[in-house]
Figure 1 (cartoon, rainbow, N blue to C red):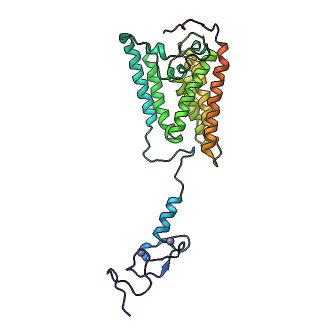
Figure 2: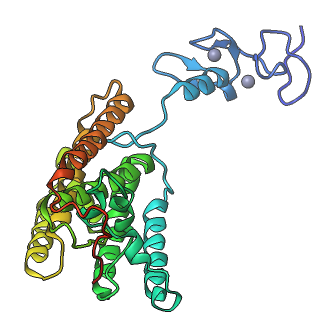
Amino acid sequence: MSVPSYGSSEVPAGPSCFYHPDRPSYIRCQRCDRLICTDCQTPAPVGFHCPGCLDEARRRRPAQRTEFGAPLRADEKPRLTYAVIALCAVMYLLQWTAQTTGANVTGYLSYAPAHTSQWLMEPWRMLTSAVLHSPANVMHIGFNMLALWIVGRVIEPAIGRLRYAALLVLSALGGSVAVLWLTEPNVPTVGASGAVFGLFGSLFILMRSSGAESGGVIALVAVNMAMSFIVPNISWQGHLGGLVAGALVALVIAKAPRGRRVLWQTLGLAGIAVALIALTIVGIPLVNPPQLGQPPILGF
Ligand SMILES: [Zn+2]
Ligand SMILES: [Zn+2]
């Protein structure tokens, strides 16, 4: 009987490792019962596991997720937040150059309740108005983009890009629905404030539901809400609508049952969208007078 020589390609006379036929083995994998050498042994709660079983276990483990169901990635950048900021900046430039080119971007894309008075004649304005800002006041776009940059970078990775997109769109729509119900029919409104206040509302809910200290957010929202009442020409209605819609979206995202979370989140967000559209349709007769056959009065 020959003595097994380690490190050589000679096949040992005794039992050998499943992964290394040239190495002797006297230990079996606890799962698959294959013989494994000392290099192939990974300590398990009982005995050892082989490299094959280890790979298999790794593959079966569900992907890591955040508290709210978003995939957890270490180097995730808030790309949608940056994209929205870039879009608002480009639109603002277009609004400025409109004076020279004659294309009245603000006039075409801003929203006043009269725009949805004749059975939803220009409903897209309820969303397009959210990427425009007041050409008369640089502070308007400056503050909104700063708030979006600060809060968006926190919320986007926490809830994932799709939920975040839904949050922005539904908050902007919520702001416009409040404008439809609560403002003068012919006063156009512009600004991402509805979406920004939606982020404020959702940040409060998300922090509460994860047990974080939310006093700072309450103060931030209170100060901004107070400012929207005190400073003239700011649409507190749009702010309020965005705040409520954003908080509702966050409630759905945070409270959806873990079992079938994506399904419940989808149904909940779809429900909010349907409710906002229903509120828009119900609000149409409120716009008085309904401006039949007349273009609505626009201008700043
Ligand atoms: Zn094994
Ligand atoms: Zn081995």
